[in-house]
Image (cartoon, rainbow, N blue to C red; front, side, top):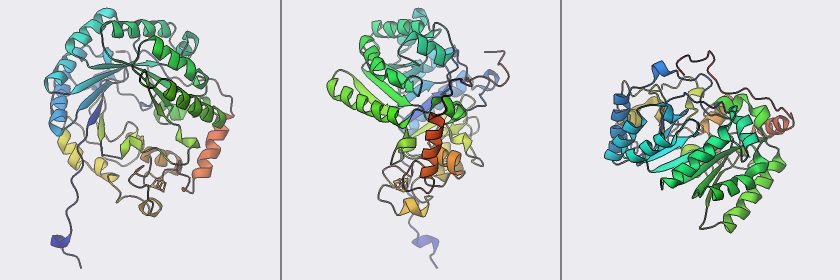
Length: 376
Ligand code: SF4
Ligand code: FES
């Protein structure tokens, strides 16, 4: 029998370097690909300013370097500038992830004065017709263009974020042109990932295999052509891939998410996994959550992996893929991600994708509160 004294101690968890702060779920747009949960947090359960400031201090102490101020729409919080100033004070790099709609030049100036380091602006299409349809907001595109120009006029670095799916994947070349025209330094071309609202809308969003492979070629060609001028980051749709994505670069390894009401999650979709206990910053310090919360330790490292992954040379490359996708498709968060070609469910996943892509479905179930939020 092995005595406790002969067991090597469990390795300390790595230090997280990024934190996604979902300041609110309120948002003027209704994108059907949103990765927020289907049950959105309401304004009356949002953390107050003081608690967020404490969380940012604790994040800096824990070793976090970058904070992504996100939502919903983070500018819906009137105390955003106060939070940015505090992040700057405690030494955090701040990235504002915004949809841009409703952000006036005066507000942008005030956000810039508070010390924001970087702005990431979403475009739902490369043209007004597509942006307005996908976001379900007439005039959204024009407002975004104005915000992008103002961001650059203020001298702030800009990333254009475009989530692509069946209705706009053909616009990838136009998205890249748009980013150049707006003087963005970076564009993120992220294929819709099927969690939250996106999972609900999978039939209307899923691209065909031909579209995906065409898109990969377009991105590769543009990367070479625009090297040094525009950085192109692409998030590949893994339903058609051979290997899964290293989701979050490994569960509980590099980053954490805090929801509007203070639950701390290892990834944005973690709440789709039943029976995980998500600790709240109202009751625990961030470092206590990172080190000790059962939800963070559930799939940290490689010990939890099924034999298929345990014996695979890629186990510390993709960390077994995505736990939430394993839950959604295999019904077991500890299964090998079905996006992996070695998974017994891989053919099933591919068949699902092909069936969805063939539906021709064009109607969206737009993101919204189940009962409209009167405070919104
Ligand atoms: Fe990754 Fe597991 Fe597939 Fe290996 S078997 S490639 S570790 S998901
Ligand atoms: Fe949760 Fe991938 S989205 S692990």
